[in-house]
Structures are given as C-alpha cells and as structure tokens.
Image (cartoon, each protein chain N blue to C red):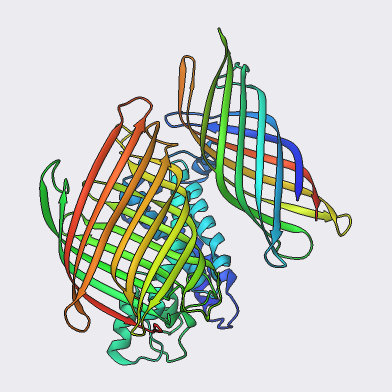
Length: 168
Length: 442
C-alpha cells in the first residue's frame, strides 16, 4: 500500500484546437496491490489532480479543474535495487467548474485513463519505504460544456513528480 | 539509417544463443518504424511521413488527440501493425508478458516520431492492445502452420502460408536459415485439442446492401479453437484461444473476433466429470458491414463449464463472462468534427453462451452479448449494443456438414444533441462447412 503527493502539470488538448492549455497543480495518489512474482507487482492506483486557478484561455484563472484516474497498474522491478517501471490502464473522470451568474456551472465527464512512468523505492525498513514517482497520466473525458463555450473531445495529460510512503 | 540498422541486426542475428534477444527485438521494432516511414516518404511520396526534429518537438509539446482515419484503418490495420511489434519480441524468444512493452513502445514511438500527424490516442490503444491479442494469435497459429520437421516443397509452402500472418517471425526465420533447417518444433506447434472449421455459403440480411429489404451475399466463415479450456490446464497466456473470421463477397472483410486466455484456474477438482474453470481473456472485436461497424479491445473474466453427456463424447457447455472495454468504436450519426463516422469510448458488458459439443466441436450454439460504450470522442453519446443468435451445424459425412445461423444485432444510441437512434439487423447464414478436430478427450 502506498500513498503520496507532489507537484504536477496538466496539459489539456481537444479536437479542433490549434494549441493546448497547460497549468501547474498539486497531485496525489493511492496505490494498493500485491506481488505476483519477485519482480512484478499488480495493483489498483487512484490518482487525482486539483487546480483551483485553471483557465481554458489566456488570462482566465477562474475555472476549478479536477481530474482523477483509477487504473489497474503493473510495477516491474528489473533489479532488486528498487527502480521500477509502471504502466496501467483504466477509467478516468474530469470535472470543470466555473463561477456563473447563478452559482457555479459544472461540466462532468468520464472516460478512459492510462498511466506510465518510473519510480524508485528507497527501503527504510522491511515494512516501510519512501518512493519517488515520475509518471504521466492520460485521461480522455469527452466534451466539456461550459457557459458560452464547448470544448470537444478533451484529453488531459498530467505529469507528476511525487514522493510516496510505501507500507508493506 | 535503415541500412545501418539492418546491418546491425543482421550482425546480431547470428548470435544463436537460446536466451531472449532483447537488443535484437528492440532493434527490429525500431526497424519496423524506420522502414515503414522511409518507404512511405521515399517510395509513396507521402507528405505525412516527412517528420523530423521540428515535428517531433511539436508533438511532444501538444500531445495526444483523436484521429479521423477510416474504421478499418483504426480497428484492423493498426492492431495488425501492433502485432508486428509484438511478434518482433516473440520471434526473438521473449515471453508473452515481456513482449507487451514492445507493442506499447513501438506504437508510442511511431505516434510521436513516425508521422507528421499529431499523436493519436486511439491509435496508441488499438495498436498496443489489439497488437498484443492479434500478435499472439498470429504467433501461435503460424507456429502450428510451420513445421520444423517437414522438408521439400511442403515445407516452403508452410513457411509462405505463415508469412502474411507473422511477417516479422517469417523474416527472422528466413535470415536464420530456419525455412529449411530441420529441428524441434516449439511448444506452440502442438495446441493439444483443437477445432478448425471453414464454411462457405450465403448471408441473408436486412440492410446489408441497401437501407431496406432482405438481400443475400456470399460469405466464408472460419472458426478456430486452439486448445480447450477444460482439456488444456493453464500454463501460459493464449495456450487456449478462439478466433472467428468472416469474409463476404460485398465488403470483403466483415468480422474478426479473437479471444485468448491470459489466466486460468480450476474451480473444482479436475478429476470430476463436470468441470468449471475460471478464465481471464483479452478480446479483440471487429464487425463491419453496411449495417454495423463496431469493435474494440476488451478484457473479460468469467467461467466456462462443461457437463459430459453419456460416454460418446457429447457434452453441454456454458460460458458466462463480464468484460471491460478498454477502448471501443461504434458508428454513429453526426459524429466527430471531421470526416470520421464513428465514436470512440470505453465501456463494459457481458456475454453468455450455451452449446452442445462432441469431442470439442460445437454443433449447437446459443449466445448473447450486451455491450455499453460511452463516447469520449465523436458524438456526445452512449451506445448499447446487443448481439445474439443461434447456430447449428448438422453433420452430413465425416467432416462435412451444413451450418445454419440466425443472429440479430440491436443497438440503441442516446445522443445529448440528437434523437435516440434504435436499429435492428437480423441476419441468417447458410453454409457448407468442413470441420477438423482433434485431441479432445471424451
């Protein structure tokens, strides 16, 4: 079982868009699983990113962007030194909220999520390790419909560098 | 660059140690991408293949998008291409699970560096996951076609027959002199129990050629069962799989389904007469005709059961599976922003089957499947696809028989900005079939 947090960056692309929107945001994750061999761990990972000052256009920081993935992940340790590769596929959800004239307007979407990356387990004891993670999370959550605008076929790609605590 | 890579690969090729050739496999994946790109750029003068460092930088900056390619390109050609990456690893002694990253990375590098179009997320999914399923099916089917004990013209014909399904494996064998050398066959050569059935006849369907009315077209149907969930204890991924291919005189390639076991376990004592086994499968689906276009990559988990009847090899079988669609595609009216006529999305569903078989060859089969696809690219829509049918195979002589199939495809699509779309497509088939089966225990 492992949980961690760290800074991330989200990049949002869409169909018909000639450019992408990018912003920094905090991320967190929780991973639980078990070993299937001495070098392979299979588990479930939940990842989330929250940006309260996101903007779909230049100068706009009024949107709250929340994205999350739940993926089945495989961690492969090529050696016993703690370095590992990670890959996983599953589901994703995204929510974008902007302040409107009569409260907040929210657009929700669900779709596909996948993740890949690398990490390093620094064993502190037999039962505890500190883990560094560098990972990408790709989520496709469909159309985002907000007042006055529609963003088609949104794909949000998030990059994360995080420190986690692993309990065995 | 292609020539240099080729020279390196030929040099390393003659390292005939039995251990997995990782460098060779990585090199061949790179060679596939380089070769396809250079042929398209230099021979076919395709502008999209003229990528370079400026394009690569742009792709890394902008990231993924959905593409607008034709259904057949995305749902068959890309998985087939992914099979080349996967089999570059398998042909170099790398195991099934270890070969998975080769398909994923081969596709990723092509998407980012192989063409001028922005990286396509749907291509990455279809090439990677479709390539794993089709790649392993092709790897094992061609292992049964090739025979390292055979000699002469028959041996050459076998090698040539395997070439279109596993070109990378065939080229590796050619360079290593294995098209002629005699040796032991790999374990995949012998599937144990198997059933191969090929039929030719006619399809009768409403809406196949026009919007209304029943029409008939010629069809060829191929069924292959490699291994058997009950007779073949789980040892390695795809030691048991099934494939169905249908070709039609109108439209050619109509359907392809492949489902292979990546994990299995006995749920009761294997010595019991009635058997129940758990299976986790990866599944590839492709259905395309004038009435329906649907496909995708799935992972399914379920239970296969078999109850023997009497002592002459008859049995009653059931299968019940639930699945998650990693990424599916389905035709949808008014979809997409460009020329694409279908949606992409994840989903889930279930399928069931009851069948009577004798020595593993099913002669009556009743089945159903329900799938839900939530579109994340294309129309803002939710699709429900329901496919069910009954199939009977009546033996005439030893091996030969007549098959009568009746199926119905039903779909309901709910759009956020358009009226609900509901369609039925009943279809019947009458085929003359030839069946060859072996290795099944009574």
